[in-house]
Image 1: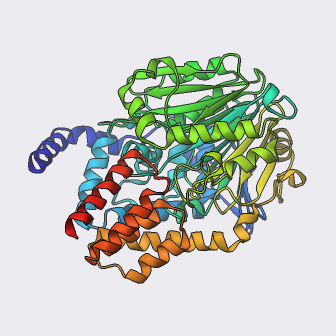
Image 2 (image 1 turned 45 degrees about the horizontal axis):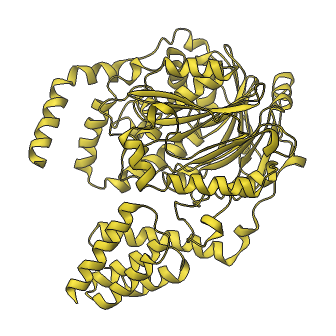
Image 3 (image 1 turned 180 degrees about the vertical axis):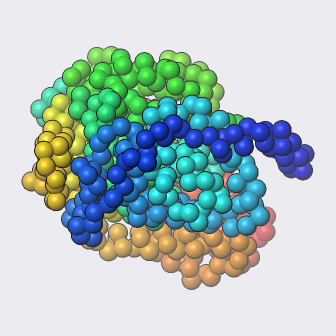
Length: 553
């Protein structure tokens, strides 16, 4: 079967070669790019400018980026100002790829598959965003041009979020978000919060950018992003529209279309109401399933736009002052969807939904500080200890960022490292854009007196144990993947560092099983079974290992 599948795939690649060639050679209209200023002025290691565009790193380590002009101008300025950040993200992403696919020959094959898969993406991306990506791509690392030319590679990267959650075996995303208003908040105003749990390695999350964009067309907006990324995963515009995205369960697509982050960016740039957001979403074809939470300060409400390749739904709760989103769909068109029902039954999405509901009701009058506490919560239902890093927790200790919005006041709080545990830095969009557009700004545009302090957890020995656990867990999993022997001492240390986490006990059990110490394997597997296991497939896998161990005894 594998041989037949390979032959079929090679035939597809062969007959699609013309389409791939066209895709690799396609470029947007870049008329006038030669007249755009590219001269970056370095004022210090933390402050750069290019015309009216600028980049400044605040004391929390977050880079504050301001861009203005048309698409090409914004792209070129973005690339020139953030070139080191782009390089950092490219290296982090490609290193992660190399770690996942260590064989050079397989990576060569993967290159062909990726080119084939993305062969028509350019047809679904608005010309404006292709121009912006082209401008950024001029500052990509040349050493990766053998994988794909700079512009094409940057375009591919915008679909990485989509591909990451489409592949069942890559647990890259498990986001949770909420909105509350009227009776659910302390001042009655709309308040939204989310964790963005996209994980592509520790290096990938080191550098963060809060970007303030003043486009030639559309609304001014901010978004929390990273080097080279012009799409939106979390953001708010000056019309009080907020956008966050949460992955849904997808079948493996056969062709890339509109990356969801670019759809979210379009909503952020051009919508001034939830109705306009829905209209924008309807006209774009996506290739994975996604929930887009849209908040509106003027309407004082939030909705979910649920998109997939074959379906479309809009969800809002009537007669309610709250909205919760995890990783399953809730609108009517998906109520009988087989894949969505399976997600609810077998994954950790419904558990996190229920836990978020529990936390919202416990904190009946939310304010930004209470919202941040919810995003940082590491316990299970009813405050149960479920181990650090459990995907059933709201805070899985791997988030790229947490973010809080108050759209009626155009205020936003963004987390700083580590995860969403560092200080949440406050920004006021009106004040920030006024500063950027009136004079050069050689300091942070944050409203520091409204910052929310870092979590006390990061100064505890428990947090240090967890960080050590993550590193050891990665070492052990890599050894298993490469069929290398794992030391018993490492297995015992794993459990010692994170004793409430089922996977610590499970991995230790696998070590004992590898050593043919089946008695201790059973003991550790049963200890894992007593803890909160992440998914039903995980439970089935664990039960299988218990049976196998018993048979060996």
